Image 1 (cartoon, one colour):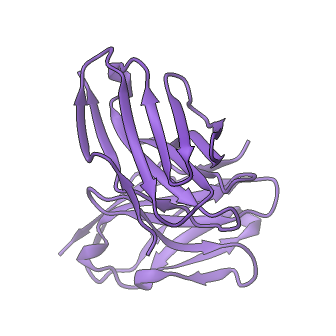
Image 2 (tube, chains in turn red, orange; image 1 turned 90 degrees about the vertical axis):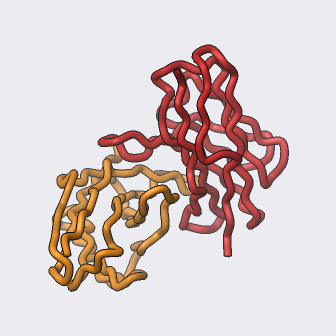
Length: 112
Length: 113
C-alpha cells in the first residue's frame, strides 16, 4: 500500500515563527503536492514538485515556499507564519504516469 | 479556466436511503474526473475515477458515478447509504500535466439512523 506520512497531525505556532511541514512518501513517486483545505473552499494547490529540486507554484503560493532535496520528501515552509495561514494542510503524491493522487492524513496548523 | 462546482454544501439522508451528490465541471478537453472521500480527521481516499470508455464507473464502498458530457456532470450515487458513509466528498478534475487536480468545495454528508 502507498503510504504518505506527515510529520505532525496538530501544530500550534505563533505569528512570525518559521514553520516546517514535512511529508514523506514510500512509493518512489515523482510528483508531490501541498494543498491547503479550508471550509467551503475545498482543497487549493499551494506548490507541487515533479522531481528532486524541481518545484512549481500552484494557485495560492504567496507566503509559502517548498523544498525537495530527496525524492521521497517534500517540505512546506511558512517563512513567517500569519494567522490567515491557520488551516489544514494536506500532502499528496502520484507517479509520473499515474492518475491517482495519494494523500497523507493532514496537519492542522493553528497560528496564534 | 478549469473549475469544479459542487452545488450542495451539506446533505442529510436517512440510513438506507439512496444518495446522489452533484458535481459539475468546466474543462476544455476530455476531462479526467475523480471522487474522493474524507472521513473525519483523515486524509482523502479515492472512491472512483473516470478517464474514458464506459460513462458509468464503479468505485469502492458501493459507490458509482456517471459521466455526462452534455451536462458537464459527474454525479456520485449510492443506492443505500450506511451510517459509516458520513463524511465529506470531493469531486476533482485533472488539470493539465503533472496530474494536478482542481477540487470542488466539497459536500458534507450526514446520515440519520
